[in-house]
Length: 223
Image (cartoon, rainbow, N blue to C red; front, side, top):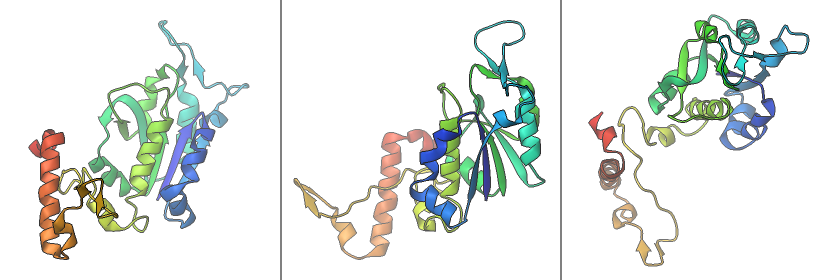
């Protein structure tokens, strides 16, 4: 899978790409993540990418030309383009599974006051990671790239993400887990997890997932 991220601040991704699961996935060539500074596509002599809004108003607006040219230079017949915007579809684990099936994604990070609305004409998905405003789209882009990468075959064990919270097949929160020591400050590991009976353990974990979801996120059970 290939993910191209268009941003004005490439250095923000240095740590993201060089640690943990993302780093290993790239090294194994299971995923390719490219960070592209779309300022390089500006036709302005000073590589300007923003300007004041028509009609007046506060802040600066990202221009359509640099982003349009960057997308056109990078895309192919298998590409889908994502625009990160507060008014987009709210991002979910189900959406991550859907995007994981796409061979090439281009993610556009917004910045400043907003972007020229004509940019929407070249995108396939408009996505928001929540009902709040960030300085730019770099952190949301990392979130989306991370959630997709861990679903790519071979990146992590399949059972790890199948049992994750918000898995579309169950829509439940993950069950509680424990490790050594068996007892800590009077708190003990449930006996069922120690008896070696995998059928009972599976039943316990499912019941705990349902209980946890009912207590913390009852809205998920309604779905």
